[in-house]
Length: 246
Ligand code: ARG
Image 1: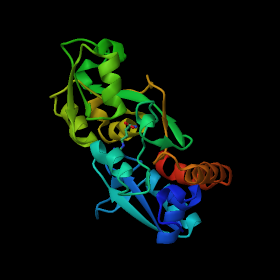
Image 2: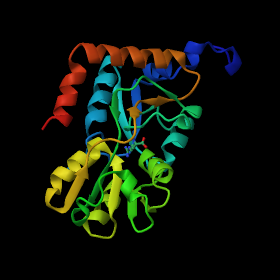
Image 3: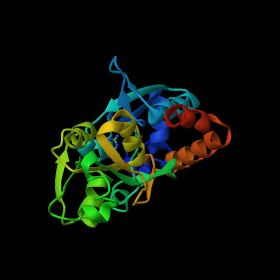
């Protein structure tokens, strides 16, 4: 191999090549988005993304290392090679796609709303929340944050570091509505049925995908074909059913 990066082949530079050489797949994620990545009682990170990452590492014949990373630093951490891939329920957005490459979507979700029980009937969709008398809460830097600013510009918006802190504001009566991805809200609602109303019709279209560094066609090709294969051979469905059917 040449000492000069410019002389390296696409393959020599590929993250796929370095994963194989290192015998380790490093996955960046932020544990807190159930059922994609969350901590169990012992503090282990588990979830839908984690099980797919395990399957990925198995196919690559390497060990898996999970790198828990705060959401607002997750793209910068990928760009500075703290890990090889983001598998963290990340929505493909054109803005993020200017910084990273995305594999094909592995699931489609959308934004939904949990409201305070006493607002039942008054708030029927996000449109009714677009009013300065309502306080919307969500997590900083997620698509729920962007969608609220765009579609409910008149509502008061308060942003939190974690999903859990934001959602608890509605439970505690300090906010009127929590906007977030459907899968998270479905679980949070199931855990707090008597305290909330769930407006479960998604009002955005959000393909979730794995993000990698730009300029790496070999890794991207491997990932897309891996996804196609596990979707076809039952492995994806088995993992999906474990986390989404209960
Ligand atoms: N899908 C949303 C987004 O991309 C939320 C993802 C949050 N993921 C997490 N692991 N906390 O902005």
